[in-house]
Amino acid sequence: MTAAPLRTNDYEPEHPGAELTPETVREHIDGIAAFLGGAANVILQLSHPPVGYGVLESTVDSGKLTLHPVKRMRTTMTYLAVAWLGDDRDRADYRDAINGSHRPVHSGPESPVKYNAFDPKLQLWVAACLYWGVDDLYQRMRGPMDPELAERFYRYSARLGTTLQVRAEMWPATRAEFYEYWDRTITERTIDEPVRRYFNDMVDLKMTAKPVQLLAARFHRFTVTALLPQHLREQMGMTWSDRDERWFRRIVGAISAVWTRMPEVIRLFPFNYFLADMRLRRRFGKPLV
Image (cartoon, rainbow, N blue to C red; front, side, top):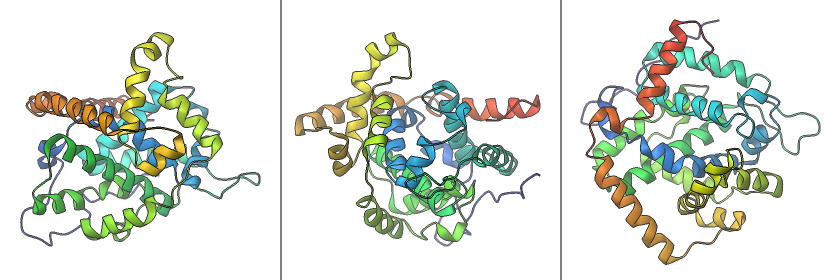
């Protein structure tokens, strides 16, 4: 069944300035943030136990990071690309595809927590993590947004949830209300031992070939540690010093000095690539996830 068309914007304009669109949001998107912040954001999402155990206990082997890391990355990146840059048809079609893979994901009688991949409250948490991660890295790379633009960008970011089952009215109405929600909920998030083991394998790139682990795992762990809230660092057994923070700021500053001056087609990568890939898959009748 084809989903009902999704609106390009989930909020009517309420403030001065035109609402962002898939075309105008492009100048505010830095694709490299997905590479820098991806794993830390997964930890944020899965630190909510129903989300964590939904992934840990999932029987959908084709989507498991530990078994199919490239496919899992493609699915996640494509979702972000469709939510940020896709049109109504893209969002509706990808929602149908994701819904198909989500149907088996629900808790069983032996699960330590109850969960269902179609629970809009859990999807709201995941979308909130995605927005928080984008906002955090935007400020690290470019500095604070103009307040009025920040509100418009925030309202547009409701698409990170409404592309699936999050209802528009569930997204906090203003950026200030979002951060009230975030500050209230992030302190409640915890990481237990089974989920911590999963995270450590992910952070150390254990699902990749040995040469990749040797070349990239140490820097990957450094970056993940940098982008986690302190209490989740502690629960992961990670340490972070003022010296580490200074080094990370220098690294992000150097990346930003180059990346934000790139032509749009490069700066949007990999989102533009994965959106084009999804559209080609759809055209030729290939699975979207």
